[in-house]
Image (tube, rainbow, N blue to C red; front, top):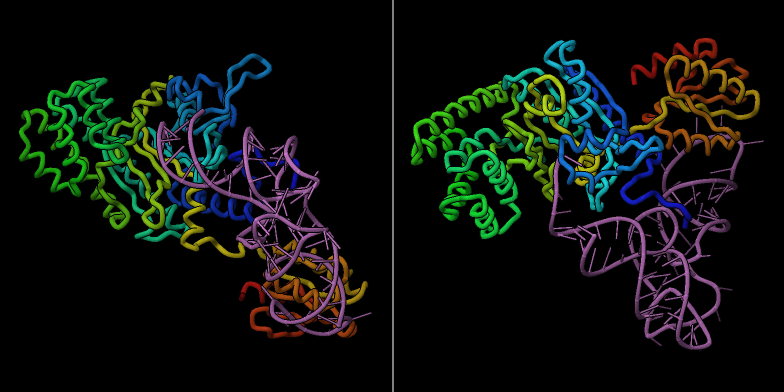
Length: 443
RNA sequence: GUGGAUGUAGCUCAGUUGGUUAGAGCACCGGUUUGUGGUACCGGGGGUCGCGGGUUCAAGUCCCGUCUUCCACCCCA
């Protein structure tokens, strides 16, 4: 047993894990670029203050923070949004809008680990800033769905649960909560899925609800409403002041607009209105959503929403924003669970088989020539038996084996073997690179 | 941070009421095989049984501590 182990919650990436990781990253990257997002990155180490400014002092308990040798209070980043806010805030006036940025980076949280939650993980973040219209929400949700599909997931294996903190805020307001109390009530609603009803009711009472039981009932009923029509009917029948009702119904018009965009994009099978989602974070200001796996153990794969006030709060110019974050750990676990991990990501194109030292030199020269053409060409280093070399050719995943034996050398040819079909043909040594390239492109 | 479970080869796991030198399959390396494939056969390397302490003539096995991983809380940016 090795004396030194990885720290709890940290991972070694052996070549197989690493190529899988790169594959996940590439899919995220390619999908983002198709949507016209640009990649950015920031430092892994940030000032502690940047984080507490966004999330409060409580967050320090979950940070890898320390004092550096210059006496600065610093922390490994637990998320990317504060960095993004700083970067965008600093150049807000110079950036063409909308700002569509994505990033893939390592983040650190000092927490007791569990399956799907490590202390170091990679997160894919995508945000649109400077665009307050629902098209930005729709595009971000679309990118989220397409990313998951491109990773190999299908409709029915995950769903994006869509909710709205604005609608909730107006609803809570109509029940008599204002300001701080309303924010507290949103926190209670966020936890209702996991907390017994009596506790929620007690919490509402503490926040000043006049009739906690009736308030809880109203909230519970509202949470279950499955679509815009039903929500509208519910609000119309509810006993409400005219102004409150107008606000709520006006917000439903925004919902219709968003949904019509999502439907036009062909995403309706991936979207589910679910008002149980509130998301605990106080800084969300509008639509919020979660990508949720619907197979196996239900887990959140990604989460996001609109946060129109955050950039300004962190010292930048006012700038509307919407985005999401998705971790590599739960995604990997899910792909493994549904057996959708890509096989043989890391395979050779050409394997050169030779017999004898002269043949080795010739093969080596050809290997370099093929490599210079962009192919992955490999050969055995020790001159093992031909049988063994063919085994290695097979396990390398190469499409073709090139055979360099005494017969071939004497005749000035190379035997090219198509590994899948087993068919062989002879190619003049002088035309080898061109011929092999042509064959390889045909598959 | 709290509570519970777990740990034997790289992986999945056997290992009797405590009793000689701790096993298997897969994987890896070599051979059968210096001209044709992931099969087959033969062989090999690899373990201070998570770590530390205790009980005992004797501990992989029993006891205590500790660490790891997993589960439920907490939290979930």
